[in-house]
Figure 1 (cartoon, helix red, strand yellow):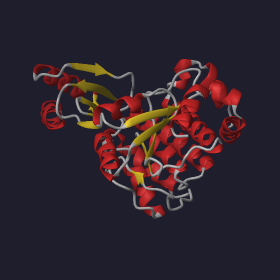
Figure 2 (cartoon, one colour):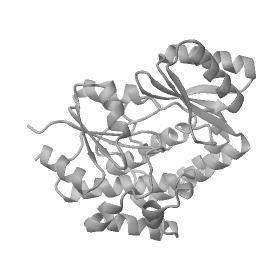
Figure 3 (cartoon, helix red, strand yellow):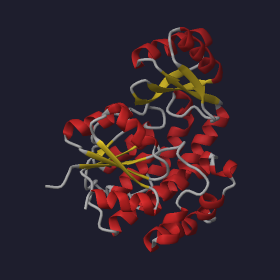
Figure 4 (cartoon, helix red, strand yellow):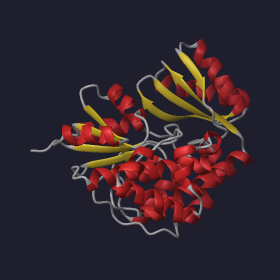
Length: 315
């Protein structure tokens, strides 16, 4: 009996100049995904992924469609080359759109439009209410939530736990003064490190609220289908309701809600997931998964070498 598989898709922070190039050069199905993205978006996204400039690739307006495209190119290559189908899919933040494509709930061209608009409105919200984010290492979530509440009371600015990535690795998001104060409090109360992130927006926090309604209007124009396999959502860390309206509500709410990645991975493990395969650049999620569930196996598909390794491992 084949092992039970969970496919996972990365979010912002995994991008780098050169990502996806080896897949594009080797596999026609990957090249077709990049060419479709270039055509749909009206600019050479493939060249941006392969050659940069890095500053533009790191602009959220471009980062989001770039990561989606590389992840789906990797997934399509796996699927076309005879890779097994998933039992569950999940994505970290932006990666949830890639997961919905892999589950058959969202067509790739529609996902491209959505993530570009998501990037546009998140960037706009960040200009309306500039914010910051920081990784906090070595504190429990409950302790950090208390610190965020205290920093909010002291500064009057919103600050929340935005990403529960794995035990001992949390990300806070909010107003700049509130983030600075929360960092001070976290260090004073035993955090091993507080690392400011190189972003100008407060993702997954109340500061993204201005983006919700404009993005919801875009979501209303996009057709969704019931997913073929369970999609574990960021907001509730449980399978999404497959009704199109429920999927739209999830993706709008996700802008201001925390990413519950630890709980999402634990849910899939509890349901029987034995092997997690990460599709897309780098191995950020694989590292988090090994810390959440050390006994499960992780594989990845990013280039011809990792594709071959993954196919052989499950052959």
